[in-house]
Image: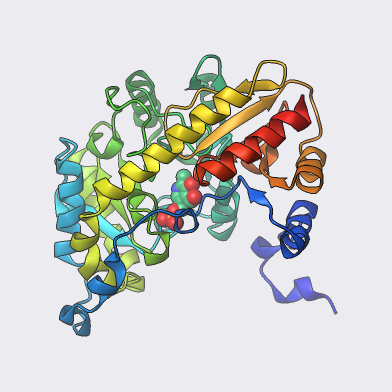
Length: 389
Ligand SMILES: Cc1ncc(COP(=O)(O)O)c(C=O)c1O
């Protein structure tokens, strides 16, 4: 049977499980594996203070009040989150979505005709290619280059600009490099976007997890220079990915912003995808923001220190991290990343992601989550160090 005759070409993905996933699944059935790819906060032992069951018993959940932007009181909570950062955002400029991925899809549909292009950072996180495929968008890449810190390589943007590139995606801070967009980079990006009529889509899901609290980084929610859409949500901010609530903040020159809001409203009105219970619970859940973020920051900073202690220049370089939940090890001896991950799994019972999952296109890298419990993290890092020495 010609299965491909039944399906849209955009879904012609490589669907077979890769060797790493197969080995991990088999091994996990037999013995304990230290999973240093774990970035699901609900599996990392954080305390949530029983917030979910209490919030869901709210009587308001029996009422359905559809609103294409999401319930006003929930958008007020999001506006307050920005106000506390010194950024004034009107609830009218906020759209609630059920996930950040859904937010990307809505924006791709808003901004791009089929076949038009979007700039994506490289390295970055693996979902982008699927989001582009599903929305008939052509992915183009710009590079993040590492010297002592990560920076945007503007040549890779300038050399690749063509008439049909409609938007540039920033991840602030980026997953997995942990790098924030700098003020000077934002000024240059605004320049390019104004010249080429491009919009900015800025994913700030990890924004609150900057390592240096004294070094205030700019959120693009206050960017008025270009048409800008900031994506964020409670999957990282409150470490509640299972509750499925994210948002888009629209900003930019007034005429453009107003038009974007009117058009986006038609898209979100077609789906009305955010459930009422989550929206009604949002104010209550935000009360645990400081407690949950404090636990996570303590965890990632502690694990980052443990990683720095175990690794040395004979093994490789740990890239400097400005924020987020990951650290990257660049291995000194070039090795096939997949073979190395399989070896670590089979011999050391430690699982880490290979760099190529995140589109590192030269050198050998391992991407390590900083979320696991420190006793597991420390043992896992020691085993990696031993194996690579
Ligand atoms: C940078 C980034 N954006 C978005 C997401 C997904 O967020 P959501 O669960 O809200 O779709 C992830 C998930 O890891 C991520 O790393």
